Image 1 (tube, helix red, strand yellow):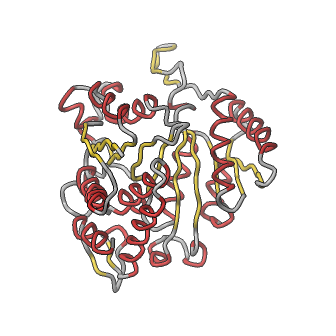
Image 2 (cartoon, rainbow, N blue to C red):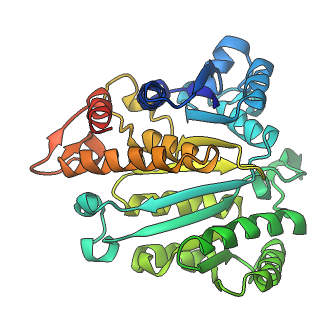
Length: 353
C-alpha cells in the first residue's frame, strides 16, 4: 500500500505526524505500507513557488492513496490567486479526478455535551454527506475580475454536465444502499437552472435504485433542517459549493470540526484522505490541535481504498476507547475531562490500538 503523505501548512505537520504513527503501528503488525512525503500548499509555494509542484503531482499519481493535513495561511493571501495554497488543493483534486467527497458527521456518545445543540437533538447522529468535488462554481469558466462601466466586476460560472451529476448520484445511491437506504438530494432548483438539471438527473438515476427512498430539499431549507432536526438525514448528496458549506455546518453538530474525517475518491476508489478542518495557523506549533480527524481519515483510507475493514475498525474503536476514558483536546474539552495535547492524544490512541 503506497501512500503519499502531504503534511501541508499550519497544524498539518502536527496532526499528520499522529496519523503516520498509527500507520506505522499497523505496519509493525504486518500491514505492508510504504510511505513517501511530498509538499502541497503554502510549504510548496515557499519551496518551489508552486502550490502543487510537478514532483508532487508525480508522487500522488504513482501512489495508491494520499494522506493530507491542511493547507493555507494568512501570509499567502496577497499572492496571485494561482499561487495561493488553496489552488494546490483544487489542482490535486482535478489531477486525480477525485470527484466524490465523503464526509461523515458522527456524534460519539461521549461527545454529546460538546455540541452546541441540545444533546437530545444530536444524540445518535450519523450522517454521510456526499459532495461532488471537481465541478460547479469552483471550477466553472469563465471567471475573473474585470472593469465594466468604470467599476470592478467579479464573476464566476456555476456549471454541471449531466455526466458529472449522474456519476456522483450513483456514488450517493450506492452509499445509501450500504446504510439506511434513504437519500436526500440538495439543490436550489427554484432559482438556478444548473441545479434544476441536478434535480432532474438525480431523479432519473433513482430509477436504477428502487430500494432507496429519494427526497429533495432546497439548500437554504437543508441548512436550517440540519440545525433543527439533523437526525432526519442519513445520506445527503449535493454539489461542490453547497456541499462545502453544509458539510462544515454538519461537522459542528458533532461538537468539533476536529473530529471529522473525509475521503475524496476517483471512480476506482483511489483517494485523498484528510481532516475536514483547515490549517488553523493561530494554534500551529502549540500542541493543542485535535489529531482525531486525521487518525479517523486513516481509517477511511484503509476501508475505502485498501479494503482493510478490520484495520479500519481497530482505529475507530481505539478512538472510541480514548474518548470513553475522557481524554480531550481543547476543542472538545469539558468539565471533568482530562485535557491533553496533540501528541498525548496520539499516544492514547496508540495505546488503545
